[in-house]
Length: 571
Image (spheres, helix red, strand yellow):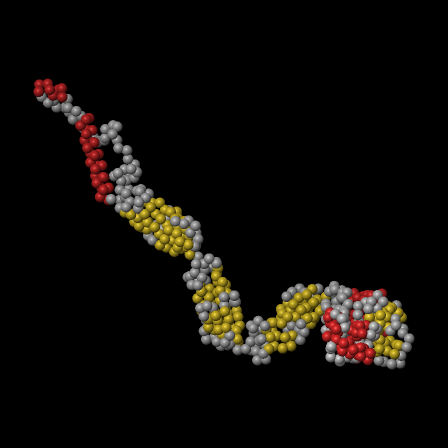
């Protein structure tokens, strides 16, 4: 190709010379007529040639030197770039240059740049911009013919910009293992490889899959480093203990406090007993409702509910929680606290001559057709007869099987003797609101004609005795004494009023002359001191009480044959 082009160039030059010579001859002809005269050749004066140019009308049109259709122009035969392949980071640029163009005297050395995939890399005048991860080819061709060309392969990579570990600190017991997990950002990073290292392999070793193993007591730093050369790292502090805490238990797990009141959380136990560190920390889920000191002292600040977390300090992560409910008013800590929910023992107990109350009434109704609340000999015999008829072992005791055989429901087996009046107070209730809740409950039982039956504490309009009425009054105001209506279903607790009168957590004893509405009034028989009856003072020398033959009524505080032996102020 080069030889042919050279020959064409020489031929073009030769033709140009011939044309110039011919033009010169035609411009200065010999005068033949004069020459013939006398047979002599006449000499003429030859004009001076100062500039050789093609004759007018024979000019050769050409482009710029070496360009266009000029057959004499020297064309580019090869192009060489400074790089034939490069690797770029996403978002970076690189100035790719033409290293050599041959022949060196080629007339037009301009080149044209292009990319095989502009979504990966673009190019302008040799400047490459890495757009996205992938591979593209940057091409360059000569402008004069497009035959000479060169290319460079561009690989665009995304380097790691951040490494995040699932743990930044961790505590392990000796010989235990844990797997650390690394999250790479961005998600399209080209090389997501991680190199794991430890600052002290004698304390904590680490595998290249991120599994750490506690070797001995001490502290070490585990580091995760990106393998792509970005130098991005993340670390986790690992503390090794000989023995970690496995459980934290509290003496109580909840408390209802009035605004301004305090309470000290008590830790019951920390296991195992040989744990390296057995101290705990305290944090509140809402310091505006209740704060807690480093020693576990809670201070109630505003109405609401929050949780105190008690956490072992050894790094084991073991915790216990304490629920705090803050209400506007709460009783002094030495008395029963106002609850947000009343919980009673299960009522699913068997019945015998040891029992009284609502479940016994149901048995007598089914077998004897009466409403007697006592489990008599007649009741026992009737139960045996039923058991014989139904093929049940004849014990005279009503268990769940016998109860169901009588046609009673399973729900009643568990719940008939466990009714509690719904709360009539809220966290915003005052002391007086609590008193009013008890009085309102007593009035409901009276208004609905509740019948007196020993050992009972049913719904308004059913059956209740004196203690059963008072329990429901207390429940309606959030007070749940240690003795309860389930206990009251046993004959030995028939006079539960005695237990209430003796219970110092029930409230403060006040004088008869200082009595006020909402106080509990306890009676003994005249001339005696043993408590046998209880009512609730309604004011105006009236009480609400449940009495045989009268049921629940409002009547005079003075009862013939009885005397007021004690008055207790609950609120």
